[in-house]
Image (tube, rainbow, N blue to C red; front, top):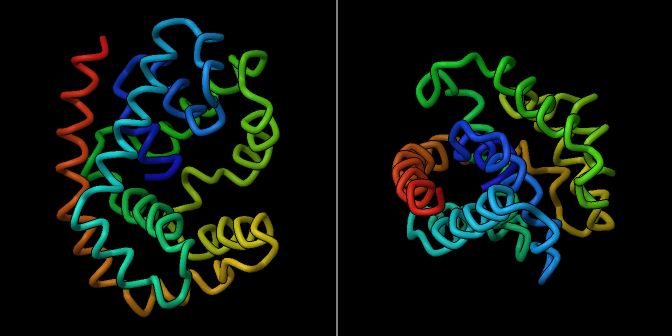
Length: 195
Protein backbone atom coordinates (compact mmCIF):
# COMPACT_ATOMS: atom_id res chain seq x y z
CA UNK A 1 0.00 0.00 0.00
CA UNK A 2 1.02 3.60 -0.45
CA UNK A 3 0.85 6.83 1.56
CA UNK A 4 -2.91 7.40 1.76
CA UNK A 5 -3.76 3.81 2.66
CA UNK A 6 -1.06 3.62 5.32
CA UNK A 7 -2.34 6.82 6.91
CA UNK A 8 -5.94 5.59 6.73
CA UNK A 9 -5.08 2.26 8.35
CA UNK A 10 -3.35 3.89 11.33
CA UNK A 11 -6.41 4.35 13.53
CA UNK A 12 -6.75 7.47 15.67
CA UNK A 13 -3.37 7.65 17.41
CA UNK A 14 -1.17 10.38 15.86
CA UNK A 15 1.99 8.52 16.93
CA UNK A 16 0.87 5.34 15.17
CA UNK A 17 0.11 7.38 12.06
CA UNK A 18 3.51 9.08 12.25
CA UNK A 19 5.33 5.76 12.60
CA UNK A 20 3.31 4.18 9.82
CA UNK A 21 4.09 7.12 7.54
CA UNK A 22 7.86 7.19 8.13
CA UNK A 23 8.42 3.42 8.29
CA UNK A 24 10.03 3.00 4.86
CA UNK A 25 12.68 5.55 5.81
CA UNK A 26 13.53 3.91 9.16
CA UNK A 27 16.11 1.17 8.65
CA UNK A 28 17.62 -1.32 11.09
CA UNK A 29 18.09 -0.25 14.68
CA UNK A 30 17.15 3.36 13.84
CA UNK A 31 13.71 2.29 15.05
CA UNK A 32 15.11 2.58 18.59
CA UNK A 33 15.41 6.36 18.08
CA UNK A 34 11.62 6.61 18.38
CA UNK A 35 9.25 6.25 21.30
CA UNK A 36 7.20 3.07 21.68
CA UNK A 37 4.00 4.37 20.05
CA UNK A 38 5.87 5.50 16.94
CA UNK A 39 7.68 2.16 16.86
CA UNK A 40 4.26 0.49 16.93
CA UNK A 41 3.29 2.50 13.84
CA UNK A 42 6.47 1.35 12.09
CA UNK A 43 5.68 -2.27 12.98
CA UNK A 44 2.10 -1.80 11.74
CA UNK A 45 3.41 -0.50 8.42
CA UNK A 46 5.63 -3.55 8.01
CA UNK A 47 2.76 -5.91 8.82
CA UNK A 48 0.50 -4.13 6.31
CA UNK A 49 3.18 -4.42 3.63
CA UNK A 50 3.76 -8.13 4.34
CA UNK A 51 0.01 -8.86 4.24
CA UNK A 52 -0.37 -6.88 1.02
CA UNK A 53 2.65 -8.37 -0.74
CA UNK A 54 1.53 -11.93 -0.04
CA UNK A 55 -2.15 -11.47 -0.89
CA UNK A 56 -3.35 -13.33 -4.03
CA UNK A 57 -5.60 -10.47 -5.17
CA UNK A 58 -2.71 -7.99 -5.05
CA UNK A 59 -0.54 -10.48 -6.92
CA UNK A 60 -3.29 -10.65 -9.56
CA UNK A 61 -3.20 -6.85 -9.92
CA UNK A 62 0.57 -6.96 -10.33
CA UNK A 63 0.25 -9.59 -13.07
CA UNK A 64 -2.20 -7.30 -14.89
CA UNK A 65 0.41 -4.51 -15.20
CA UNK A 66 3.74 -6.35 -15.10
CA UNK A 67 4.12 -6.29 -18.92
CA UNK A 68 4.17 -2.48 -18.74
CA UNK A 69 6.24 -1.95 -15.58
CA UNK A 70 8.33 -5.06 -14.91
CA UNK A 71 9.90 -4.97 -11.47
CA UNK A 72 8.14 -1.67 -10.72
CA UNK A 73 4.66 -3.22 -11.10
CA UNK A 74 4.17 -3.61 -7.34
CA UNK A 75 4.90 0.07 -6.70
CA UNK A 76 2.50 1.08 -9.47
CA UNK A 77 -0.25 -1.12 -8.02
CA UNK A 78 0.28 0.43 -4.56
CA UNK A 79 -0.35 3.87 -6.07
CA UNK A 80 -3.31 2.63 -8.10
CA UNK A 81 -4.83 1.33 -4.86
CA UNK A 82 -4.36 4.76 -3.25
CA UNK A 83 -6.21 6.18 -6.26
CA UNK A 84 -9.13 3.83 -5.73
CA UNK A 85 -9.18 4.62 -2.00
CA UNK A 86 -9.14 8.38 -2.64
CA UNK A 87 -11.74 8.17 -5.39
CA UNK A 88 -14.07 6.07 -3.21
CA UNK A 89 -13.15 7.61 0.15
CA UNK A 90 -16.72 7.89 1.57
CA UNK A 91 -17.03 4.11 1.30
CA UNK A 92 -14.16 3.67 3.77
CA UNK A 93 -14.19 6.72 6.04
CA UNK A 94 -16.74 9.18 7.46
CA UNK A 95 -14.34 12.14 7.37
CA UNK A 96 -14.01 14.15 4.18
CA UNK A 97 -10.77 13.37 2.37
CA UNK A 98 -9.45 16.99 2.41
CA UNK A 99 -10.05 17.13 6.18
CA UNK A 100 -8.23 13.83 6.69
CA UNK A 101 -5.35 14.94 4.45
CA UNK A 102 -4.97 18.20 6.41
CA UNK A 103 -4.93 16.15 9.63
CA UNK A 104 -2.10 13.96 8.30
CA UNK A 105 -0.09 16.93 7.03
CA UNK A 106 -0.52 18.63 10.40
CA UNK A 107 0.84 15.62 12.30
CA UNK A 108 3.83 15.40 9.98
CA UNK A 109 4.55 19.15 10.14
CA UNK A 110 4.30 19.22 13.96
CA UNK A 111 6.85 16.40 14.13
CA UNK A 112 9.20 17.72 11.47
CA UNK A 113 12.19 17.67 13.84
CA UNK A 114 12.00 13.88 14.31
CA UNK A 115 11.23 12.89 10.72
CA UNK A 116 13.88 10.88 8.87
CA UNK A 117 15.79 12.89 6.27
CA UNK A 118 14.04 11.14 3.38
CA UNK A 119 10.60 12.05 4.76
CA UNK A 120 11.67 15.65 5.46
CA UNK A 121 12.72 16.00 1.81
CA UNK A 122 9.40 14.59 0.59
CA UNK A 123 7.11 16.55 2.93
CA UNK A 124 7.14 19.97 1.17
CA UNK A 125 6.14 18.35 -2.15
CA UNK A 126 3.57 16.13 -0.47
CA UNK A 127 1.85 19.13 1.12
CA UNK A 128 2.30 21.65 -1.72
CA UNK A 129 0.92 19.22 -4.32
CA UNK A 130 -1.59 17.78 -1.82
CA UNK A 131 -0.77 14.23 -2.84
CA UNK A 132 -3.26 12.57 -0.49
CA UNK A 133 -6.20 14.17 -2.28
CA UNK A 134 -4.48 14.36 -5.68
CA UNK A 135 -4.58 10.57 -5.95
CA UNK A 136 -8.33 10.84 -6.59
CA UNK A 137 -8.05 12.39 -10.06
CA UNK A 138 -6.01 11.45 -13.10
CA UNK A 139 -4.19 14.78 -13.33
CA UNK A 140 -2.92 14.54 -9.76
CA UNK A 141 -2.09 10.89 -10.22
CA UNK A 142 -0.11 11.74 -13.36
CA UNK A 143 2.01 14.24 -11.38
CA UNK A 144 2.76 11.59 -8.76
CA UNK A 145 3.77 9.07 -11.44
CA UNK A 146 5.93 11.61 -13.30
CA UNK A 147 7.76 12.28 -10.05
CA UNK A 148 8.24 8.57 -9.40
CA UNK A 149 9.47 8.04 -12.96
CA UNK A 150 12.06 10.80 -12.52
CA UNK A 151 13.22 9.17 -9.27
CA UNK A 152 13.95 5.93 -11.15
CA UNK A 153 15.93 7.71 -13.85
CA UNK A 154 13.01 7.29 -16.25
CA UNK A 155 13.46 3.52 -16.49
CA UNK A 156 10.24 2.56 -14.66
CA UNK A 157 7.76 3.46 -17.38
CA UNK A 158 5.58 5.16 -14.76
CA UNK A 159 5.09 8.13 -17.06
CA UNK A 160 2.49 5.97 -18.85
CA UNK A 161 0.92 4.60 -15.64
CA UNK A 162 -2.30 6.62 -15.91
CA UNK A 163 -2.90 5.34 -19.45
CA UNK A 164 -2.30 1.76 -18.28
CA UNK A 165 -4.71 2.35 -15.39
CA UNK A 166 -7.41 3.61 -17.75
CA UNK A 167 -6.99 0.52 -19.95
CA UNK A 168 -7.18 -1.88 -16.98
CA UNK A 169 -9.45 0.17 -14.72
CA UNK A 170 -12.35 -2.24 -14.20
CA UNK A 171 -10.21 -5.25 -13.35
CA UNK A 172 -7.88 -3.33 -11.05
CA UNK A 173 -10.78 -1.65 -9.28
CA UNK A 174 -12.46 -5.03 -8.78
CA UNK A 175 -9.21 -6.31 -7.24
CA UNK A 176 -9.01 -3.34 -4.89
CA UNK A 177 -12.67 -3.71 -3.88
CA UNK A 178 -12.03 -7.33 -2.90
CA UNK A 179 -8.75 -6.68 -1.14
CA UNK A 180 -9.10 -3.43 0.80
CA UNK A 181 -11.85 -4.47 3.26
CA UNK A 182 -9.69 -7.48 4.18
CA UNK A 183 -6.73 -5.18 4.75
CA UNK A 184 -8.84 -2.85 6.92
CA UNK A 185 -9.88 -5.77 9.13
CA UNK A 186 -6.33 -7.13 9.30
CA UNK A 187 -4.96 -3.70 10.25
CA UNK A 188 -7.54 -3.27 13.03
CA UNK A 189 -6.55 -6.63 14.48
CA UNK A 190 -2.85 -5.73 14.32
CA UNK A 191 -3.50 -2.34 15.90
CA UNK A 192 -5.24 -3.99 18.84
CA UNK A 193 -2.20 -6.22 19.39
CA UNK A 194 0.25 -3.31 19.18
CA UNK A 195 -1.55 -0.95 21.58
